[in-house]
Length: 207
Image (tube, rainbow, N blue to C red):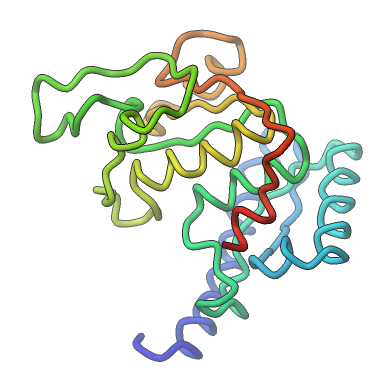
């Protein structure tokens, strides 16, 4: 579809189907899920942000797994997050998460694109978001389904790390990676939190 109303109508259909899949799969593990749909306006507006944080925290207290997505049915260019990397980092900052895991189509952050440069080396740990490191990001992703390449993940790292969360970029093709990361095993690229009391993610995403 070319027209925005058509895209938003299809998004409404897709959101319902997506939640059916999440509920079915998580139910097999005895877990309950809930859907949270957000736009940038949800986070920037103080009252909406307060309500979103309270809802997320209450769901977690209840043992329910929130599935957060952008509300594509109402979002326009002015109130879009842009990609799922930024959305997940904002949610991590919003609820003061300890860890953010970004699953990608490669094993982590490399010194160059490993698909085109065989000499590219995986960076196992990042302790500071230095300018040279930020330049390692690529603007594109090879995935036809996901949004955001390595550049967006590194920008999301700024939000997560400065808000006090560690972050890991790992390959999403191996379903065991999530459990391994939670257990502290060396998987992908670990970005260590760099809590900055002068950093306000609201101001950052409002720029």
